[in-house]
Length: 389
Image 1 (cartoon, helix red, strand yellow):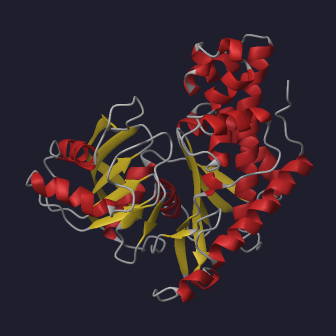
Image 2: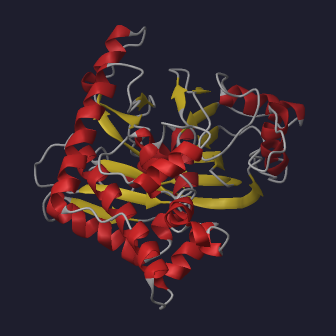
């Protein structure tokens, strides 16, 4: 069986490759690492108010009303949840149906009318200076007609207006940017933070000095002073040392050649790699869901299937550690730690996952360089900060 384990020299090479590709994305559009500016600064000190937060993830959709006060947030109504209309089962889903489900859950929140909206939208989208965002492509197996290339905040507003829900101003942000803003509210060094998602999909966001985003100077966008949140879309990174099993999963995917990092680390794809490596077990639960794969890996059993399941989660953590170390290279090495707020079902599935990331980071970037934290309702919290910012 092809080995999945990555040694430290390989992880260092992966880190360096990602550093170079982030540099390319900062300088020019259309690169492997998209480096999408979010046009959001770290949360302002003393920010207060109420906001409607909507979190559209890879599988689940939820909405809540939050109150921001004294650099903290609390949910005061909700969250109300639903399943994201995805089209994964082959049933066509169009723009109206997709945003209509969003309006359905907002309608159940009595306090939502007229509030500013933070719309956490976890798909590759180019945020515009207006803080709406244009969908670049669907990922995670989603296929909704009539949305790619359009403004998703506008689609949400149209659906809410049809329900007479009086939407306020909408700020669209990626889920990793939402985690980033939530992390920033937890530390005085608000710009030295990273948002991390390892769930159905995978991505990283962080703050970059405006002048480092040199491609903005070639566009009709003023170069920002200070720091700006950036959605890296790091799931599209093609790391070295992937295996034939990874290649098989990619070949069968609906976005062949793209999102190779995401396909190596995230919950939507890990079971598919397991099935590719053990085709005789492709119909078993571990080949169908990340939860079942995790139960196989850490349920106390033994055998080649258990070893493979465990190796998949361990390699996922190692690849994520290398990616975080790469992003950390863009922050000053002045001794202050970089705070990482991790979210997503894979990241939260087992404390061993985050512990392995932390252990690898201490080698790749130096002991104490990173601090991993968590927070309840991070995506909702970060979305509320964005709406009020």
